[in-house]
Amino acid sequence: MTVLVTGGAGFIGSNFVLDWLAQSDEPIVNLDALTYAGNLHNLDSLRGDARHVFLQGDIGDRALVDRLLAEHRPRAIVNFAAESHVDRSIHGPGEFMRTNVLGTFALLEAARGYWGGMEGDAKASFRFLHVSTDEVYGSLAPGAPAFTESHPYEPNSPYSASKAASDHLVRAWHHTYGLPVLTTNCSNNYGPYHFPEKLIPLMIVNALAGKPLPVYGDGMQVRDWLYVKDHCSAIRNVLARGRVGETYNVGGWNEKPNIEIVKTICALLDELRPSTQGSYARLITYVKDRPGHDRRYAIDARKIERELGWRPAETFDTGIRKTVQWYLDHADWVAGVQSGGYRDWVAKNYAAR
Image 1 (cartoon, helix red, strand yellow):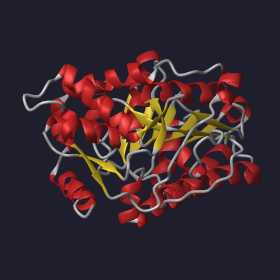
Image 2 (cartoon, helix red, strand yellow; image 1 turned 90 degrees about the vertical axis):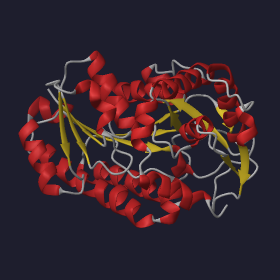
Image 3 (cartoon, helix red, strand yellow; image 1 turned 180 degrees about the vertical axis):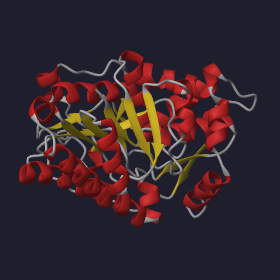
């Protein structure tokens, strides 16, 4: 048997591929467009491994996806492929609509055609698992109950709107065509191989370089933090035992304001890589908040625990320590992703704030 993974060279996707092949000999066909956040070096440990077949390509390329499905006959598709950064979606929403909406549509159509031609047990056991975000639910007031799977969709950024649209497409292809789908909506991920535009890796790499640590607004935006390897284990559980047509929220039970995250990173770096200039907290710089910045996200992950017995293995304290240590141990990886394009993006996003 084989599993087709899309977006498997990105942050969450590459962690999923690595974890899957660390505990299974079932091959993975990995389709990734290798945009700025896709990095084949994330998968260096799999070079020469016959269980991992990589192809560069777009989920919107119907002919390519049809060929992969016909050639490799996967028992499941796990869709990580997406543009995923809110700030980038504000500056350029078009790419988010193309990949997250039209790309998901094209992938669903390819899956529907492939599944429609299957028979017997193979058809009955096929799954299309769509990986999404808690940002589709909008913003929570302080003290409001955490997002459950029945919470209304209220996206507030071009990114979250594009992911909400993709979720609705997946739901519709199940209810209209019977496609056996599963959807997961996760909270903020962190961990190894995270492109340094998101909060945690940006703070780590900027601090080590002695650069300002930009904190939006008052820094009191609250997020639930999920260690990426815990997220991957949740996806494996949903793929194996989730109920067809259902959505499962995946969270880490770690609600924290952004400024607390930044100060925690500074304290860990003070311990693990002290600076001769003093505490890294001296670099914290408050900047103008981004447009439409949601104030609070929180995931209620009781359904996946109740139905599938899944809970995160890492606390935030254990996960963030592992993450900081990983970046300290992988300076070459960080240098490799900080291209001229990356530097231009950081300058563009923060220069006017």
